[in-house]
Amino acid sequence: MLPVILAWACVSIVDEFKRLIATCMSFSNQFPISPLNFEEEQLKEGLAILCHQAETRMPRFSAAGFFPVDYTMLGMIAATNFLAVNVISPVPSSEFIIGQGKRKPNKQTTTFLHMVALKLKRETEAMEPTHKKDRQLLDRFM
Image (tube, rainbow, N blue to C red):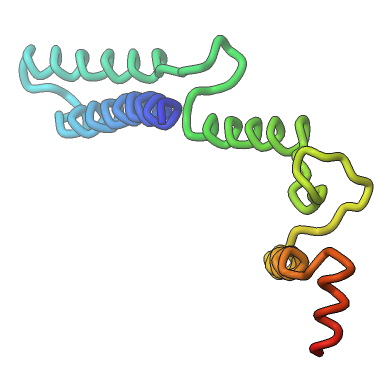
């Protein structure tokens, strides 16, 4: 959230300077080419000086000169986060090892349907009798 607020503040300041230049130019254009009195001449010169100063001293915000602080910075932050999370320290997102905490060589893909089928398989295995006598009794009745 802080980078968004910072970018918004910096862009707003630059936009205000651009509006100041446009306002000075429009006021300056409202005066006649040859001023009628000394006050109009002073106002026109003052507006010209203010406009020139605003153009030459346009603020440029940067992070120690490395990159500009504006909305493009948000894209760089997003790209950096993507690289750090997905490329530098990859987490296997499409594979898992059966039996958490155990290392087994057989990896299976993790789709939703596969996870449901695996859960049903484990539930049915838990319900099946494990002893020979129980299996024999079950086989007799079926």
